[in-house]
Image (cartoon, rainbow, N blue to C red):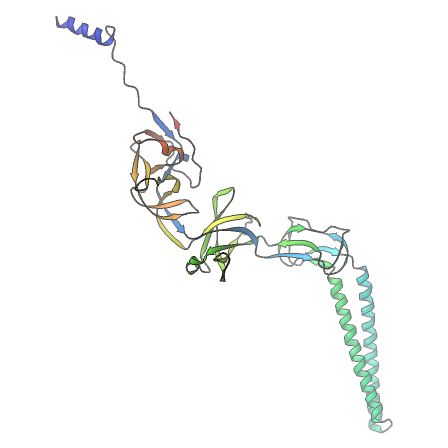
Length: 372
């Protein structure tokens, strides 16, 4: 009797005798890649006024023609390194060489004339003492000697000037560097002041920027500066303030600062636009990416992965590093906790997740999580 009842019950419940109940469906989980998560870790955070500007060479020179004439040759081109004292270009010096020869001849004549005047003065001095000639005749000999000396000085000055003029036809590198501009070619006829070449020293750059006047008391020479370049957001460069303008710009209410940036490996280029921050305050603290924090609501919060599930936890924030895009977290999470980034923050609490790599380099852009 009981066996029949049990059999009837199985048929009624399962629709067919002997079939077992289907298993419950497995809960869906989401696989998160390294770009969707970040680990809470200790970092050095820096805060201060944001600055921006173009990089320029601390040492640069535009070499210009100092004499008029045709360009004979230009020995160097853009992008080529040069050494101090190296010959870079030559101007035609034929006319100047002729003038130099004439000045040299005039100087030789003046030297001979002075020798004659000196001998005449010495002879007249003896004759005057012997009473053969008058004192007036001796004074005439002295005057002739003075005139010969003056003529020699003038001739030597003209000779030195012509030598200098001839030397100006040779364009010499003023320091070690790289040619950044070439404004003349062989055959060009130039005038004094015409630009020929521009040489820059790329091993040391400078960033000229401004900070609000209220930061002036917290900014001083030697203060570190960190900055990034467009297209190279993953890489951070550093320098330090070398000079500070002592006056506030009345038009902007800001103070100009000048940041020295070593560039020995020449990875930075003159003219690049840089944006960074003066590190007037720094500290070592637990930090997480700014993009992981939800600021809407009564208190900031983050989505944390705990025991394979997503949970929302409130956090207390501190110092914010605008350049590194990291923020200090004082409470709510611990070192090593994994938090969600980007579109992964759209997951609801309780969602099961699997993290393929629970670390994320700073600055990578988030992508969409892939359900599995």
